[in-house]
Every structure is written in C-alpha cells, then in structure tokens.
Amino acid sequence: MSAPESESDAAGLMESLFPGARLIVAANRAPYRLVSGVHGESHWERPAGGLTAALDPLMQRFGGVWVAAQSGDGQELDVPPEDPTYQVEVLGVPAETYRAYYNGYSNGGLWPLCHNLVERAHFRPSDWHSYRQVNHMFATQIARVARTEDVVFLHDYQLALVPGYLRSLGHTGPIAHFWHIPWPPTVVLRLLPERRLLLQGLLEADWLGFQTEDSVDSFASAARKELGARILRDADGVRLLYEGRLTQVAAVPISIDTERIEEIARDPLTEGRIHKLRSRLGLHDSALMLGVDRLDYTKGIPARLDGFARLLARYPSLHGRVRFVQIGVPTRTEIQDYRRLASAVRRRVAEINRRFRTPGWLPVRLVERNLRLDQLVALYRLADVAVVSSLYDGLNLVAKEYVAARVDGGGALCLSETAGAYHELRDAFPLSPLSPERIAEGLARAIFATEEERERRMERLRAAVAANTIHTWLGRVLRGLRSAAPQLSGENATPV
Ligand code: F6P
Image (tube, rainbow, N blue to C red; front, side):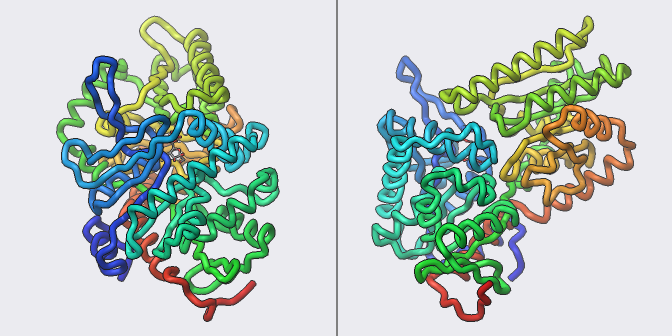
C-alpha cells in the first residue's frame, strides 16, 4: 500500500495495521483548555504551536485519548467543544513541580540545548527531579488508559523518560515517540548531565521519529557513543540495538492538514476577511511582508526586523510601498529569556517605525496575540512575502501553512536554511538567519522577483506540501511502528 493521501486512507491504514487499536497521544500541552473567568464563567482556549495544530485534526478523525499536563488542577474534557470526537485528560501537577519540569528542565535546559544555544541552557538537579516526577505521572496515567493493543504515541522533549517508565510499569504494547525539535550534535549533547538516562528512556520506544536525517544521524551516533548501542541499517532504515531491544529510528517530517487549510482559503468568507484586513492594515497599494511566530528566541525575530530595516534603508523606493506585520504570540513568559526577547522585539519595532515612518505609513506592526486559523489563513492569502527566519527550527509549520493557503498560486516564501522545513521546501527564497544584511538580500530577491519566478517557485512548493500532508505523515509513522513492534529480531540487518 502506498502512503495515504487522505484522512480516510490513513484511517484504513490504522485499522489494517493495528486492528481495534485506539490512538493514545501524550504531549505536554493539551490542544484545548477550558479556562474559568473570575465570575465563574468559562471559555475555551486553543494554544499556539505546531504540535497541537498538527495533531488535533488527526485526533478528531481517529478518536482516542490525549494525555497532557498543566500546573494546578487536572481536567477531563471532551473535544473539540463544538462536536466532541476525542478525550483530553490533563494531569494536574503541583505548581512548583510543574514550574521546575516545564520552565526549568524542559524549556530552560533541553529546549536551548537542542537548538544549539548552549549558553542559555541550565540543568539544575531539582529541575531534573521534577522532570522525572512529571514523566512518571504521564507514564502512570497512560498505563492506566492504554490497552496492550492500543497505539501509544508520545511527543517531544518534555516526555523523554516516558517510554522507559511505561515499560517498567509493565506496558508491552507498541510505543512511538516523535521528537519535534532538532536533536543536537553529540558534542552539544555532552553538555547535558543526564543524557544517558534520556537516551535509555527513549530507546524503550519501538519507533522514534525525528524531523530530519541530521537529527536521526545525531541521535544514532549519541546512542552508540554514550550507551554502546549498535546501529543496524537495512531496507527499513536505521535500527538501534540496545540491551536486547530494537528501536527503529526514522526521519519523518511532520506536516499540516492541507485539505482543511485549502478549504478555509477557498471559503468565500475568507475573501471577505481579506478585504477587511486590507483596508484595516492600509494595504491599498502597498505590499505585505508577514512573520508568524511564538515570541521565541529560536525564531530569529530581532535579526529579521533588522533585515527589514536594512531593506528599507537600501531601497527608498519601498518607503510607503511595503509593510511588515509580525504576529508574535506570547509564550513561556515566566522565563526571563523569553521576556527579554519580547522587549527586544518591541524595541526594534518602535525604532524602525521612528526611523522610517511618514504620515500615513507605519512600516512595522507587531500583533502580540494568537490568531484563529481562519484569521491566519486570510493573512497568509494577503501576504506577498512570508518570512520564516528561525535560527534553528525542528520543522516550522508556518512555512507549510502559508504555502497551503496560497490556493491562488501567488505569494513568496522566504525560509531559513536552518529550519527543518527547508529540506522539503527548497523552492523557497533562502534566508541566512543570523545576518541582517543577508536577510535584507533575501527579502529583496523575493519582493523584486518576476511574477513568473514567484509563480514557478510557489507551484513547486505547493507540490511539495501536497506530497506530505499530516495524513501521509501519520501513515509513515504507523507503518514504521508496525514494522518495528512487537520486538523484531536483528536478522536481515547489517551492523555498521
Ligand atoms: O515544537 C516544540 C514545542 O514545544 C511544541 O511542543 C509546541 O508546539 C510548541 O513548541 C509550543 O510550546 P509550548 O507548549 O511550550 O507553548
């Protein structure tokens, strides 16, 4: 059977590979949150971030259970709120423990380290203690919910110890774990005091997925150097043999619900939104450049804004003719590095506006809130250039969303060469994210490109995005997991 192209193909594949199985997803963050107001009223919130946006449509299609965690009380929710199809079980974690696990070990340690920003990373024993505790809570809850035949699908760096804990709790069913962010080179990983325990925990999964071949190679090399695991290569790819257990390791870049985004992009309501946005942003005869990110220091936003300022300095003909809208969604605001980044971005925006503004033209606008998908799609349709200039990025789904939304074949994508998505989206205008001069050059190439070049590039980008949707991705994960679990013998594989 070839890779599934639609959600019904993926559903058929799930049933044929894992008959009767439910999907038990575990990720730190829940895709929906029910928030109580001060007067007892409550409202739903949807978080920003690629992981929840990518997996929610799958869960809506397949049903099952999503285990997540939060500080304070837990929650049990039937979601999506308008037409429930699956359950979310949110573990309530004592505030101090959650802070040390989430702000401390996960986002103050693993996050910067995996993005090679080593000086920002710190690893405190007390944070590690909480990280272990919360991972154990996840494993206990999953072991309670999952039957042996179910597919347990774990996500990301917050949950590296869960596969190991699940096995020690006696769970023998198939476990897949997908690492959404880059896996660092071995020399960088060596700065992590608990690296061996994390590697051992992950190697209890049957199947481990990464966004890029670089991450697969770095992980395999770390498993060999740190634990003495054997690397076996065969037609199915790379498998690691460690203490009698085989784990398949694969590069399977994640994607988006392309059909859904195209449907929104073609909806007549979107035309109405585009029209309103155009007049609200004063875009009558000026072009729009767009950035959409969480306000994270890995996204390269200050250098991007500096690049835009250089573009304006170099091309006075663009004054009054182009605007930059940066959607910057507040994130991890309890961490000082994130608050500093948000202030630096605000300062840059104010400086650029002070320097270049003219009556009736404000070059940059910063919008510090999360937008609904239908609002984002309208913005994507309106943006002449989308700018993704991450310093490092596991993948970057904004790049794929932008391309999927361009059902009109228009627009141009400027994409960092160090974002995982660049491997699939080579027809983007490349950006070198550290250098404002180079960024200005990249932006100029995109904005001054001929109509033919922009259309040709977009056509190829659209073909690349259509070739790997979220359903294709899940199909590849399920196929990989099926061939890896239950335990395979090492026959037919060649040690290297
Ligand atoms: O991709 C990494 C990740 O941690 C995802 O889990 C999530 O999509 C995103 O970053 C947002 O992070 P947080 O859940 O910490 O806001």
